Length: 119
Image 1 (cartoon, rainbow, N blue to C red):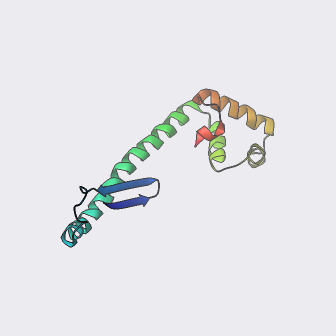
Image 2 (cartoon, one colour):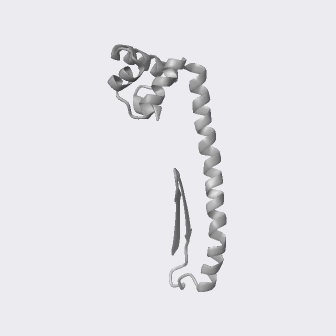
Image 3 (cartoon, one colour):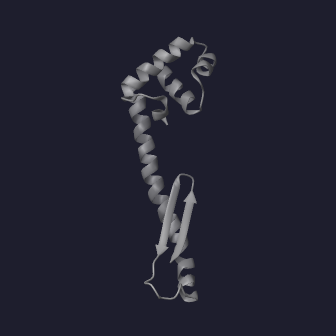
C-alpha cells in the first residue's frame, strides 16, 4: 500500500493506493505519475474544503449577525479569543453579571447551552 497525507490549515486529504496481496509495491513509473498528479490533488482538496468551510463559516456569521445585537456579537468574538467572563467585563467596561446575562441571551438566541459551542 502507498499512502499520501495532505494537511493545510483545517483541511486534510488522504490518498491511498492499495494493491492485492502479493503484488509488488508502487513502481518508479507509477511514482512519477503520482508526482505529476499530487499537486492537482492538493489544489482540489484545498479548493473543495475552502469552499465548504468558508460557506459554513459565512452562514454562521450571517445567522449570528441577524440574531445578535452588536454588543452580543462583541462578546461572542471575545469568547472565541479565549477571554473569561471577567476579562470580557474589563475589556467592555461592564459588570461581570452583565456579561453572564448577555451570554445567557446569546445561548438562547443561538439554541446552544455552552460557550464552547460558539467556536
